[in-house]
Image 1 (tube, helix red, strand yellow):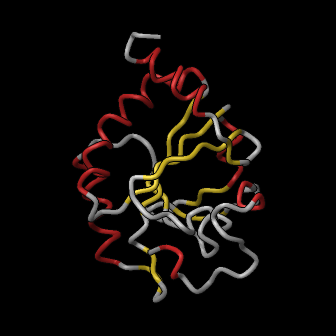
Image 2 (cartoon, one colour):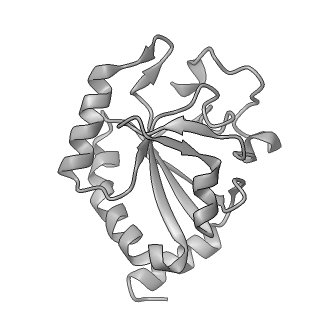
Amino acid sequence: MLSEKTDLENTEAFNKESVKDLRKLSTKDINGKDFTSKDFEKYDLTMVNVFATWCTACVKEIPDLVEVQNEMKSKGVNIVGVVTDPVDDNGENKEAIEKSKLIHEKTKASYPFLMPDKTNFNGRLNGIQAMPETFFVDSNGETKVVLDKAIRICMECIGIG
């Protein structure tokens, strides 16, 4: 899957400490707009949802993520999607980019769909075995394990927290 990409110099395996550092991230969204680690600075926490256009469960959860984003943005929480199939060892896959744009439109996604950069988010995307995959990034560009906080936030969103 993503671990098969060949342009991964200076990255480490999925579970290594160094993959937590996304301070040098520089990529583009499916429309060609730049996205860098500076974009994480605007929010206390950013939920990064990794998915593929061929993953039905991934696409079906996007409208729910839009609702979460609408509810949480004012509380300092943002969402970005990382759609994996528009980039492969041969470069950009135009057909997958167009499919990503269609999904973005049809699901009324209000957050950007990013494409993996040449380092697979400093190796963080390597080793993903199933999608959707979600992780969190703080305002400093470091990935965080914040399941307790995320669960509390989600519980509050649905009125049981």
